[in-house]
Length: 374
Ligand code: SF4
Ligand code: SF4
Image 1: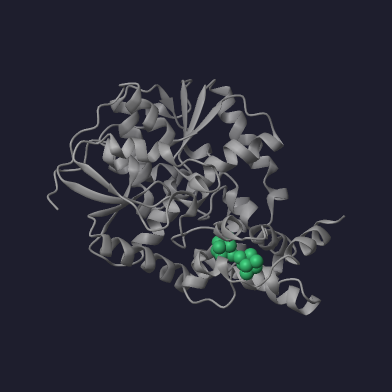
Image 2: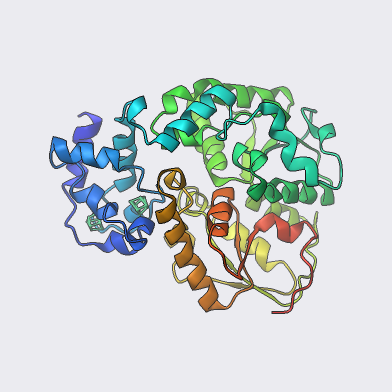
C-alpha cells in the first residue's frame, strides 16, 4: 500500500470528536486550519488535498493531536506528507528562503559562515581555542542560536556550564552546518544527506565520545534521524540530560537563586518527541531556592508555544498568539520566569512583551542568576 493510501486509511478513523482541538496550538490560536481539519478534510478530494497542502505549514508538528486522539489518527504524518507533495516553487516564501539558505550557506539565516562566531562575542573567556580540537564532548551549537542575537545566550550559558564542570569540549566553529531539521520539516530530507554526513564526519574526526545539543530539533536529528542516514559513532545527549548527569555526579554544585518560582515549558520535540521529561525537572529541583511550578498541561501533554514546525516562518501572528497563551498562563501562576530548553521556544516566547522572564535552563547553572526575591 502506498504512503497516501496508508494515511487515508488512518484518517478515515477520525470521528471529528474535536479532542485534539483543545491541545492543538494553532486551533487554540484561532486558526480554522488545524488538527481536526487535517485529519477529517485533508484528503477528502483532490481539491481539498491541494488546499491542505498549501496550508500545511499551519502546524508546529508538536504531536499533541496524535497523543490525545482516541482513534490514533497520525495528523503530523499527514502534515509531513502534504508538505512533501509541494513543489519547490509552491513552498511558502519564507519557508523556501530557509530551505535555500541551508543549501547555499549551511544555516537557516543565509548568513556568512564567518559570522558563526558572533554568539561568542559576549563570552568572558575566549572560545576560539575550543574550535575543532580533539575532545571528550562535542557541543553542537545549532545555527539558530549561533547566528541569532536573541538566542546567543543559550550556547554562552552552555559553555559556562562546561567550564564550571571542567568538561573537555570542542565546537566546530564556522564549519558547523545546520542540523537539517528544517529540511525535514519542509518535507525535503532528501536534500539533507550531504550536510548530515559532513556534521558527523567533523565530530568523528575529533574523536568525541558524547555529542551535546541545546536545541531539541538538533537533538532529535542527531539521535533519531542521522543514524538512519549514516553511522553515528558516539553518544548523543540533550543539554538537560548532560546537566542532570553533571549535577548527580557532583561535577557541578548548583548555586542558590534565592526565592525563585519558575514554570518549565517542555519543548514538544524534547518531551513528546524524544521522551526527555524528568531530566530537566531533576536538574531544576536541584537548585537551592528554586520552586518549580507546572503548566496545567505539561510533560508529554504539553501544549506547544507556537515556536516549532516552521510555523514562525509561515504565520508569525498565529505563532505569537500561541506564545501569548503560554505567557498568560504563566502570569496566572505568578512565576518569575518561564524556563525552557529550546531556542525556538525561547525566541517565540520572547516575541510577546511581558514582565515574565524567558530563560534557558543552562542559564540557571551558569552561575549568573542573581538572587531574586519574588
Ligand atoms: S483527529 Fe482524532 S481527536 Fe481529532 S477530531 Fe479526529 S478523531 Fe477526534
Ligand atoms: S501537530 Fe500540533 S500543531 Fe500540528 S495539527 Fe497536531 S496539535 Fe496541531
